[in-house]
Image (cartoon, rainbow over all chains, first blue to last red):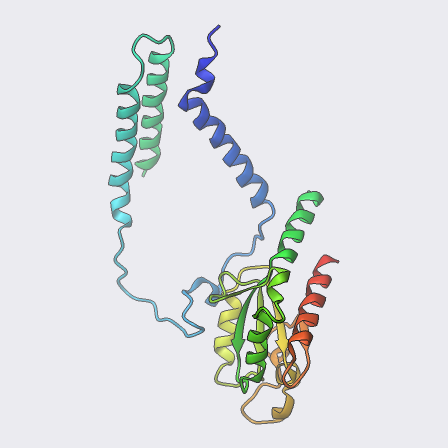
Length: 110
Length: 143
């Protein structure tokens, strides 16, 4: 049986993702549950009180477009640069497309 | 996980980052605190670094009696520190008000405003005394 798929990027991605989730879970159990309240939630200004601005323009509305492009871009690049003729190429390509579909579904779930 | 907790406690003891705040001092204790950070006394050998923001600090090193004007600012800065956090009162004024005890414009020491973990007396507190106080604070964290 050909075990080279263990060295492929999707496998590495899943292994690293699992390791990251484990590390996050272990160390989040050590973190204190108390959230930021009062002045702790406000920006640091050398102790001075900072008034809240009514309008705070930022680029958060751009994020959905940026992530949409990133996900599709990566999926397209990975599927088009795969080795033709390899046994697992079709399955890996399907996994990438499925992953991209899931990512976009999560992104646009609202 | 007690083993992991011990590792985290060990890491926190070996790297306490401090934020220095002058709450109405005459600057003598501030000079001694800075002197303790210089290579001659080298309090940095305990892993202590002077930080410029309470977001990064573990220990708030306060000098001076808390004046009524600075009281709100001091509390605000303390609230902006992440847990676990500790307060060190450096100098006699910070411990009990010092020569300003009973004055109309001061709060008679840091512990009138914040929970203090260590008191370092002196007018000003000498760098060896500051080092001694910090080491005792770190030793108490081990327990």
